Image (cartoon, rainbow, N blue to C red; front, side, top):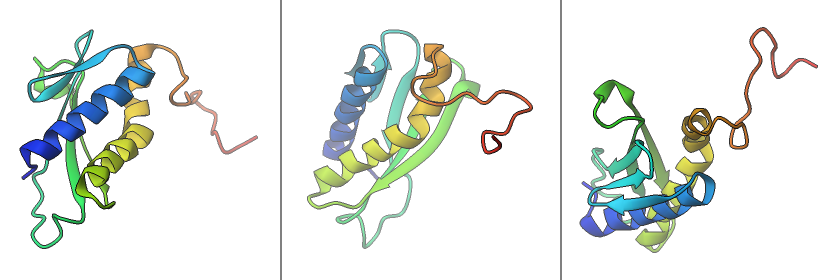
Length: 126
């Protein structure tokens, strides 16, 4: 389980980083909410017995529309810095660099965060 303190650190870090790249996001109870519909929730459902003090694991739920369970993308990220607060923020930063661009680009309608692939053309072929 994610401690209440770790959850608040993760939510605050998510709100700050999402706001930096995509409008205004704020912590609203146990979720980070945008000025539009999407929300982000964090938890830890993994058994971290024996390593919980060294590794922060976040299960991230990104809901395009929280009223529709089919619109939720589940992902996870981990951090391993000391102190633990830095590990939680590192996990958020990893998620922001990997999954967040793929989820935010269609919402933004611009391709600043991720590259768009033209159908029929491989990005690896010149």
